[in-house]
Image (cartoon, rainbow, N blue to C red):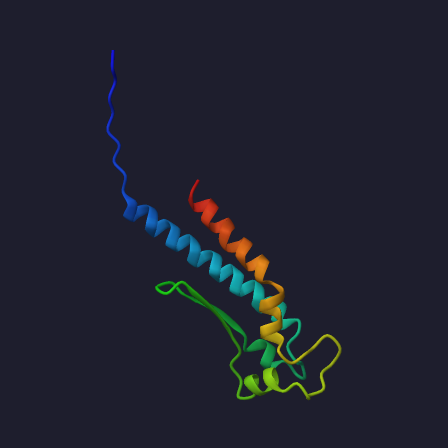
Length: 116
């Protein structure tokens, strides 16, 4: 006795779920990098540190971490500035490089979760 069945697979729903999961993972990764960067950002009174934000462009699946003060880029790039212990130039770049594997793990975890 043979049995048959039909399977209907909607790839667009899977694609949509995976894309949303990737965006969530990217956002979590960007938030993580922002937190690490905030621990390294040059600190005087705190405006630079408090101006940091994390965001995701879901269409392009791109995450961004930025600081919004007139001197943020200068503080980041000037290697000759003196900073308090633990604070440094290249605070964002160094944080991203140091936390790359954590960011990848956060994205991967969200993708695995979506595939359950």
